[in-house]
Image (cartoon, rainbow, N blue to C red):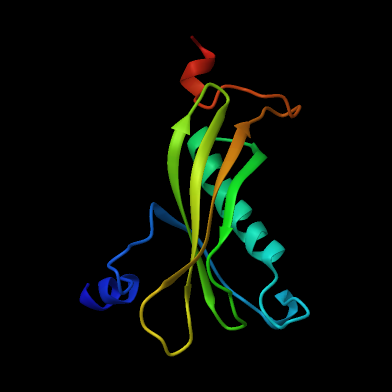
Length: 141
């Protein structure tokens, strides 16, 4: 689809890394005192998106245990459509490290803009909240 490809490309031909995990709209209630979207809100959206991907990988419950290298490249504004993409960096016995990127679609503007990226670490947990193997087949080994 030529239109989707054109909207996704940035001027330097950079594409989002990974798969689309979530998409949401930045609203006025999510702003800081300067009127920009609050960084904590954006980080929580990334945590939600990472949790969706991590729970699919782990086939169950997960918990965030670390966030590294959180970089805010550009501001997010009210009305921006925030798209969070996730990619697997590595999977361990009980944990997984995911690279997450937030891109925005600004009103009446074409290419997506990368606004934030970070590395999130999740651990697979059982019903009691204890670490468990990420893959069900590893529990049998």
